[in-house]
Image (cartoon, rainbow, N blue to C red; front, side, top):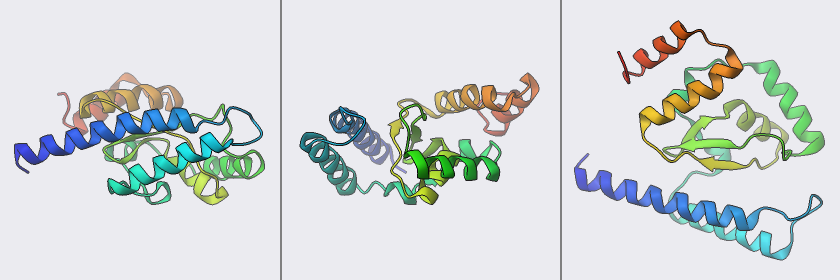
Length: 162
């Protein structure tokens, strides 16, 4: 890929991140019990922006290679999906984090939302690949209780360090 194409892609991703953040803030419901007309309009605009830029629909998102390093837990997905069917995507449920238009953190929550047919919340990771890897290890390391040796093995596998 040429430098110009990479720069164009990065500029486009930067624009999408900025626009998504602004529209997501506008689209957040002010009340627990529903969306006002302004929030619905902002959510619609967000969908238009992402659609125009060729971003995948949330249910078609791919899992980033970094998130594939961490284990899949079917019982957790089932438990989350049942909870989401009863309560929706709760405010205390962390957002799904995207990097390079793929899921960096939250593959289990994404699958649970698909099964429960609820729309999750998203955030976009703003940084380079090494920072994204360190972010994912920091989050999943706490959840998975990785040893220092396991963390180093992941970093070596991703050819970021070592």
